[in-house]
Every structure is written in structure tokens, then in C-alpha cells.
Image 1: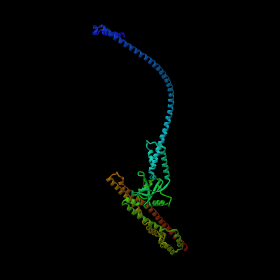
Image 2: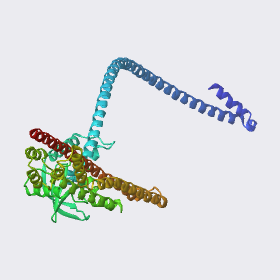
Image 3: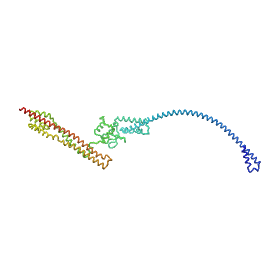
Image 4: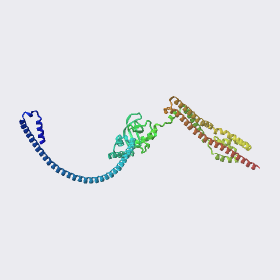
Length: 478
């Protein structure tokens, strides 16, 4: 404070009014000095009071801080204990978590395997039900199966239950025969109600406007379609009897329509003849002529069948007695047979030598051979011509096929089917006609050879009997 007072005095001494009135200035300066001193003292007291208050506050704060530090230290110690306890719990929980995660991974793997198995089962069941003709009765039953196959869908127990119920219903339907009225697509492509018989999931038959036929299920439209071709009359009759309840047997396609589809591709004999071209008709003509000749030869040989042993048994006693009129009468009784005619031709030469008699009988046998071998050479020629005509049809069919390839290329095999059909059908028909003709020719030729050999053998026996009887009569005359 004193230094401040001196600074004020010096400032007063340096002022320009210093010489004017020093007493007034000294008094004013003294008053001003006194004011400054009072102010300084007041400020000092205020500062001391503030310092005192600050010291008290610091003491209070120090005590509070010490208490807070003590509390913090206690809390830190408690937290350390809690930390140690929590670390132990964390270690235990980490171990439990590892065990649980391992169990979770195993359960997740089993669950994924189960879900995959369920999806595969749903896929198989969907394929089975989609292709089942029973699906025409309940087309919406495969909706849940389609949903279960989605990769982002988690199947629930209700879905599995629905799938099992659909499969059980399919199993029950496979063992049932259902007769009902359904909308079908007829052979003209028109949707109409018809009487339908569902034989499980295997076959389906219908009756509509007096016609009976089979049905096929279309997965794309979920409907039953009538086959474009009616089955054979035998199958239609069996379907009609089954509808009427007259029989317990019904045609069943275990291939689920695969065999029935073949009916639409089958061709009858007339269709094959049309596909074979003009070569078919000469082959059929040859077959018809050969059939007539075979029937005629078979009837001829059967009509000329003769019991030669019994005939010679009746003739030998008459020869031994020399009753030539009786021998001629016996031969005339069966003159329509070859052996009696041959022996009757030899009787006029009975008094000649053995060689002359044998020559006479051989001449008679040679006269019978043309009648026995009639038309056999014709059958041999026909059997040779038939496969040649089939080969000719093969050549013409291949020529037509190559002409189609020249103009249209090989992009559409159906364009070449007519030529290939002609080639194969004529070959098949030619062989089909030639093989039976050759077989019958061989059989008939064998029978003719047997008949000729029998004539020769019985003629030799006749000569021997005549020679023996002649020797006996010569011995008796001597």
C-alpha cells in the first residue's frame, strides 16, 4: 500500500499545478491518499475474508475429497472383488457357452440334415403326386409340397403332417377302385362329363356316347385325356363288362400309362400295307397263290393216303392162289389210289420175267410221280420270288428316302419315315411270305418222297410175291 501511495505523490509532484497551491494540493492529495488507503484496506479485508472462506471451503472440500477417495478406494476394492468374481463367472460361462455352442452345432447339423431329408421327401412326394392320376381329384394337395421345397422355407410339423396325410391318401387311393363322373377331354379335344373308372393310380377307363376307352392324366393341365385311338374290341368289351359289374377283371397298366401310350403308335395290318407301297400287292398275290396251292396239295396228299400193308395183305393170298381176276377186282376197288393203279398196271405182265415186270411197274410209278409232285416246283419258284420282291421294295424305298434327303435334307426325320417304312415293310413281308412257303414246300416234298418210296417198296414186294408164287406153281407141276 505504501508503494502505491508514493506512486500517487510522485504523480502529483510531476503535475503542472504543482507551484500553484501546494497546500491545497497536499490536502487533496492527502485526502485522496486516505481514500486509497481506506479502499485498499477494505479490499484487503475483503480479500482476507475471501481467503478465509476459501480456506474453509478447501478444508470442507478436502474432507469431502478424502471421504470420496476413501469411498472410492472401498468401491475399487469392492469392484476388484466383484471383478474377480465376475471373471470366474465369465470363465464358467465361457466354458458353458462352448459346450452349448458345440451342442448347438450338433443340433443344427442334425436339424439341417432333417430339413434336407424333409425337402427331399417333399420333392419325391411332389413328383409322385404330380404324376398321379388321383391328383385330378384333388389338384391343390401338392401346394404344401411345393412350398416345403423352397430353400428359404423352414418346414414345420404341420407341413410334415400334411405331407404324410397326402402320401397316406395316395396309398389308399392306389388300392381303391373309384367310379365317378368327371370332366374329361374326349378324342375330339372337347371337355365333357363322362363316366370314369379310376383303378388306383394305374389305369383309368371311361364310357362316353357308347364308346369305351382308356384315359391318361396330364400333369400340365391336371386333367384326364382320352386316348386318340380306341383300344381293340376285346379291351373295349372287357371295359364295358367291368363297368356293368359282370366281371372282376379289368385291364391294368402297371406302367402308369406307358403301355397305354403305345396304343396310339401301333399300326394295324392295313396301315402297314399302305406304308409298303405298290410292291406289297405282288407279294400278297404270291402269298395267296401259294396258300391255294399248299391247301390243294395238302388235301390231295391227305385224300390219297392209303394203308398199303393192309392192301397187300388182301392181295397176297389171291396171288398165291393164282386168282388174277380177284386180284384185278381188289385193285379196282381202290383204283383212285396210286398203289392199286400201279399194281393193276403190273398184273398184265405177271407171266413175263422179273426184269420186264419191274420195268412195267417202274413205268407205272413214273406215271404217278407227276400227279404227286404237281405244283411243288411252282411253290419253290414262288418262295424264291417273294424275298426278291421284298428286296425290290427295299431298293425303291431307299431311293425315295434319298430323294427326300436331296430336296429337304436330314433336319426332319419324319420326312424320311415313309421311304424307310416302305423299305422295311416290303422286306419283312417278302420274308414273311417266303419262309412259310419254303417250309410248306419242304414238308410237302418230304411227303411226296415218302409216297414215291412207299410205291417203289410195295412194287418190289409185289414182284417178290409173284416170283414166289410162280416158283411154287412150277414145283407143284413138276
